[in-house]
Length: 319
Image 1 (cartoon, helix red, strand yellow):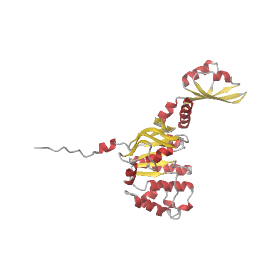
Image 2 (tube, one colour):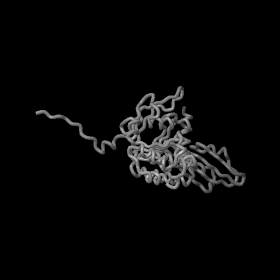
Image 3 (cartoon, helix red, strand yellow):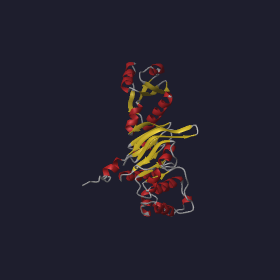
Image 4 (tube, helix red, strand yellow):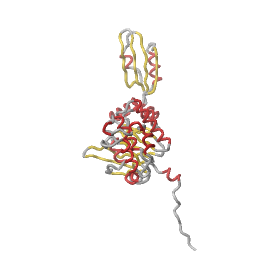
């Protein structure tokens, strides 16, 4: 009697183990410009990830590769264990990009209905409109929308179906503060439903507030990857601010230990001193050692924007 070996069917645990996004040694050049250089990263189910980087860091190229709009020169890009093209055809990916216009000669509702009909797992039109917060402009012509309204319509198109990955490129450009808050409320609901959200942004306060993971790109490589708090800690420096009565001896302040920057403002009757230090405790101790009496002393960590600038500036200086 012989037996035939069978391959076990994939389980939910197996599916969860497959990365939503995987870049393995991916590089992409445009002539002499290397936009992506041996990029390696993975995204997993349920993450909300901010993609940061200065201009030319490779953010747009990375998103193009992720969405299968461009092919890598070397390495592999996969979504849900398959090719980007196949994952998109299966309706597993929704994208909101800066490039590309909207059909202007139709109503918002008609455009949303078209996106719903094209999606393999489309939601109802009313659900899409409500989730994107555009029910009130559903019967307006697309060509008559403001920039912020157009962004909200693009978001509606990106979430027209039950996609597992939502990719957003500078999603809140052109939105006012109220619209941005509404938008991110909608995105939080997407994440709470188990979807992976990846967004590139220049609004670093959004990354700090919204993302549970921040990836900093620089020259096509991952410079930092972690929570916003971890990125801030990696930058190392802390801010020290205090007031001084009377004149300030700038030379003595510049000689304080562990300084990375110093700003002194004010007049002869009083000054405000702003310091960045890699060892705030030692620096403050040395301030008192100078015989100074700092008033309104504050020591705080860098914000994400300051940490981002510190990391990228240090990387450039090291080249």
